[in-house]
Image 1: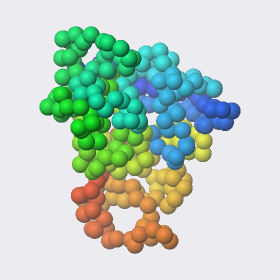
Image 2 (image 1 turned 120 degrees about the vertical axis):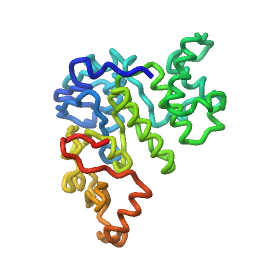
Image 3 (image 1 turned 60 degrees about the vertical axis):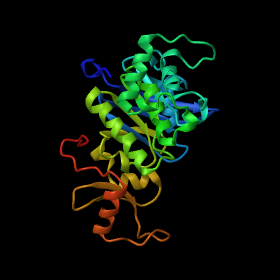
Length: 298
């Protein structure tokens, strides 16, 4: 995979000024003014129905803004989508499961239109390069129906990567994956960011698995999108307000940090001692290390 020159380009990844979106006469969110720097890994978080996917689709120009202005990689939404890779949540349902992994990845170059598309040697080489980076080159000839959910998710990411995008957007990429597949996906995203300089946005419900690679978050709170560095987002009061339930930000004796509902609340689990929680988190989640510079520690 080629290293992105995004860091050498001027301007932020996304810049929004008083943006708003309406659907069917209803305002989804409004008064969004924020900037996402280049080369960052950003979560998009909020409750169900808050408009997380809507924000991504607005960036892609699929859903028009009802107010304000937005620039994505310096261009108006939808004007330069060739520089953006997008992995929708519905990827595994939308794509023909009889396609091979290689054929699926090639769609990132030939398009998803029906009909015959001649594939050049160069396109096939780029598809192999993307699959090699993602670690699925040995699955190239297998049909999607023969692959696990985790492997299909990796095919989806390879399809988005095959055109060497500067910005990668993923909608709930960890949903319905087992822990091992979640870890592998996060490791791939980490490499894309650290080795290729790629800007990444991830719609997510659970931050814990992503904490080691995140640098910030767009959070949809009270009908307004906001952006903050990760240290500012990892605040118990903010997250409690955001999710509508008591949330704690816990740092273990080993330095790992994770977000958890208040287990001592009525209806919750019994509070475990810190060591037990730390052991569970060490084996079940990838916790974030404390940060000293406002960015994620990798």
